[in-house]
Every structure is written in structure tokens, then in C-alpha cells.
Image 1 (cartoon, rainbow, N blue to C red):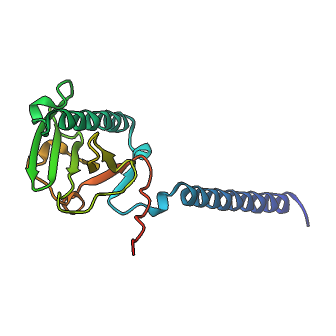
Image 2: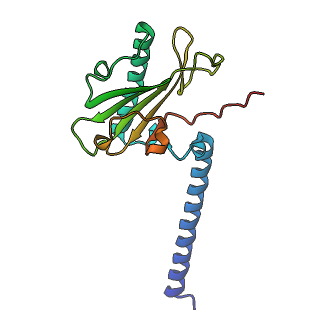
Image 3: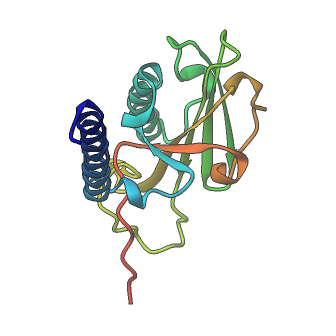
Length: 190
């Protein structure tokens, strides 16, 4: 009774088992890769730059360089540069706003209404606060005088439709923070 129908059934069951095993191995490897890369520790409003589409990855890299230039201008002249002094060679219209110790630089796409908008958020320290001992990393930049800035880069779909106004908490206004790697948790000091 082991004719062609029996062999076909065994072949189909064997193929199904192979597919299930392959999917299980893929999911196990993907899960362990996520855990070791720290992706699992991102907050809901955060993404890694490596997961962005190519043009947005390039824009993010350019904004990282722009942020350093903005910080250099602040260190050299003692003030934050105006929007007209930022991103002159880009395809974005820049505005800036300040509120207290926070400075925003908003880059809205100049031509493509569906392109992403970008927001640089910089927080200066309160002069009355104790010195910030955070190490230099993606979200902490130290000026030559020792001032530690808290910095972040955010993106928002349909950037041309964003109102050019100050944003204190981007995560509550639909913005997504872009990181090159997950930020390590800050240890609690006792």
C-alpha cells in the first residue's frame, strides 16, 4: 500500500517539517540577535538609524555632522547660531526656537511634501545644577569649556506639514528619536 500516494504524502509531510524547522531556527536567531544588539531595549519612540531607508540614513549622518558644527559655533561665539547659518547646502528649510535651556533646530523638506522632517534638540545644563559627569556618547556632548549638552535627533514623516514651533517633548508630539545604538540606562546615584 506504499504506492505513489503514500510517497507523495510522506514528501509533503517532510517538506512541511523542514519549513517549520527553518522558521523556528530563523526566529530563534533573530530573537538572540535582537537581544545582543540591544534593539529590544529601545523605547517605543526610538529607532536605530540602521533600520531607516537609505536616504534617511544619509540625512541622519549629515545631521550628526551638522550638530557638531552647531556645537562648534556655540563654543566659539558663546551663542547658538541662527537657522540661516545652519544647513545652507541642504534640501531643507531650517528654523530654530529656544525655550529656557532647550534649543530646537527644525529641518523641514523644501520640495518633497512627503519627505521626513528632522529636529535637533539640544539641552544646556542649568548653571545652578551640579556638574554633569556623563561620559561623551551619542546623547551627551561636551563643549571645550566642559559644558555637557544633552542632544538628540528626531524624525517625523510628512515633515513639510509640521508647524515650525518649539517642541519640548518630541516623543509626545509624534516624533521618533533616531539613534545609532540603544542608549545605556543611567545608573541611579545614591
